[in-house]
Image (cartoon, rainbow, N blue to C red):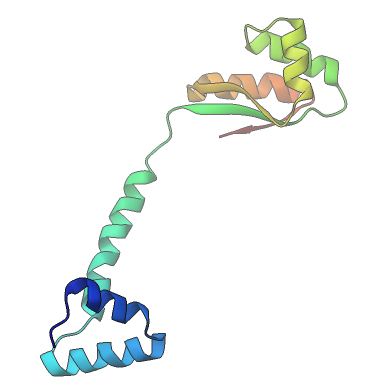
Length: 126
């Protein structure tokens, strides 16, 4: 009896992990192959992909994580670093943790962070 690929996959799905491990060992012995080199060969590719992701970040978000005890000063600082009006700035500050500025340069993000921290807020750059 010859199994189709779908039937073969269905059979594999119904097996226990121990049975599958035994089958892999038997196939390795029968055909003189090893399943391990394929996994090892994939590892360098994964490392290359992770390295590409870890490129230097050029755009930052300024996030207030805590407004601290000086809420009015933080509202003033938010108005200073954003084009928001008084009510919008107040609503934004009261909804902390919240992103105040999005996708800005490192220099601008550092300046905004300094102003907000000087006003009493806890700020993260993300």
